[in-house]
Image (cartoon, rainbow, N blue to C red):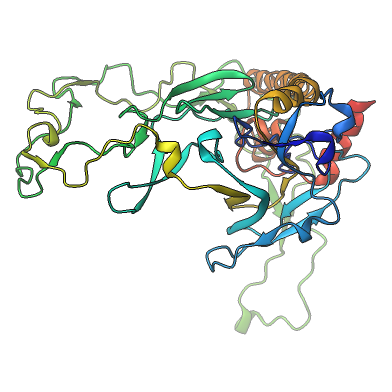
Length: 448
């Protein structure tokens, strides 16, 4: 049994802001429901959620001033990153949280539950579903991953990732409240490796022949590049005209008429003296031979590559033809959630290549009631606001691209940088970083 929400320390959702493009992160789970929601908008508290008296949660954490009394950094040398407390300013919004300040670090931190939980009622969901399953034969523990897990949504909008685990060993993975993946842990195609090891395994004494062909497709050897394929990417703009005032017969640089030979100059030792060159003051528009600017060639198709065709020598995966032998480690487990141990705590673990990730609050619930209400009453309004903001940015980006495409000149480096600055996270969602000050100003303007 969980604890009534009102009796737990107040918390909301795990909010991961990235000081720029907001990267997707795993979200809530039920029948244990561990909810992570990244957000960069105003904070909330339990009073904002319409909860009932019977609504229960096992764990709620807001990372307030006393969070260090409940959480502990991992002592394993792998985890060389250290979280720091973070509080929002008046523009940034959001709840207090933990911030990762150092690049290229592993972060690991955990907090114990008040009492252990039976995993048959749920378990922790990370980026994708992972079980640490114990063999009923020899007690060995093997980490098993969800095969073909749903990919994250790589945009700037706040998303909710949900894992729901049921006592009958089935599960659902939801994005924004919509089911993306579902299945049963006991199915052989659900986990890798499967919960129940196969009856037979490939015989290692039967190796793949050296001439065995495993490539399903090959480049068509008879295909030839079309005669009109190879054209330059940029071509002179034939419609461009030399600007008025351009002086083709004037040099761009001239000898400085105001310069004079230094008194200490010795022609015998230093050679014949020549005045230094300066920019030709007559070249206000341009001088020298004029060439039309380059423009994008509408006929450019890129590098030609031959089409792929079925490989006539393909034989298929060797494992399908390899000899098999009895698997001594085979067993059948129809109740795998009873063999992953008790759940005694909540942990945050991640590897960061940059800085600015902020973890806000966590809720671990007995069922989907509390997380569902948080999605509807807290996450959805923030999603709608961020969606509208992204639409505005995409329209601005499209207009800027259209302007550049219509230009007759090759985009300068400065122009490209300007486009990237306007596009921010749309063009490089995983690497672009925006300062807190710039981001805060954007949010404050939207709030008005």
